[in-house]
Image 1 (cartoon, rainbow, N blue to C red):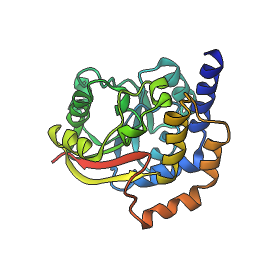
Image 2 (cartoon, rainbow, N blue to C red):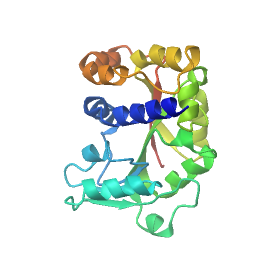
Image 3 (cartoon, rainbow, N blue to C red):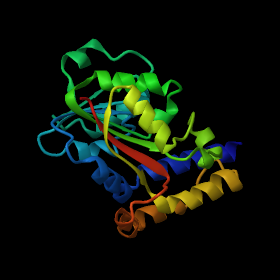
Image 4 (cartoon, helix red, strand yellow):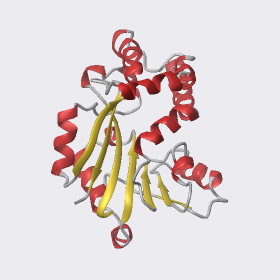
Length: 235
């Protein structure tokens, strides 16, 4: 168990350091974010580093104190980055609703929240009229395996299910698409067939190196993928 725990920690660290992969992900959501951005579940700032460009004002949030400390350290020289807390299991703070955001960015977070419908309502509440939600969640319950369980995923999402939950929360969906088709088979093999609670060393770094090739998926509009990306708006 100790070895598996160390392997899981190493996997999470490797995933956080995939700059090319993270930038590819950022490219999927970057259009129309506006000036005032709330990032939910910023971790150590791997997407924050891209969000903060230009004249944007970014509020980077996380419920884990050690992550907030790292965000403070990493962006202490950036006047346009503020670090705080936004807990999706609680009602949105009044001050956030008094000054609505142009966009909420929530990547690989919603699956960790048991009451995801409530979480979507809270993100809807802090957006201004016409504001944008950029959401990334793991796709296909069939792929739910030991790694999902180990990192605290309550679920993976089907396309129809996510669409219904977004609409019930009050969002109008602009884009809902699969992402990262090439990672689907390795995830299935590791998590479901081999029942690993971690990804083998080398597989994550390989994904980073292969990003130029992986980007070709935009030409086929993948019918499945490791994740789902949703771009939605508050009417």
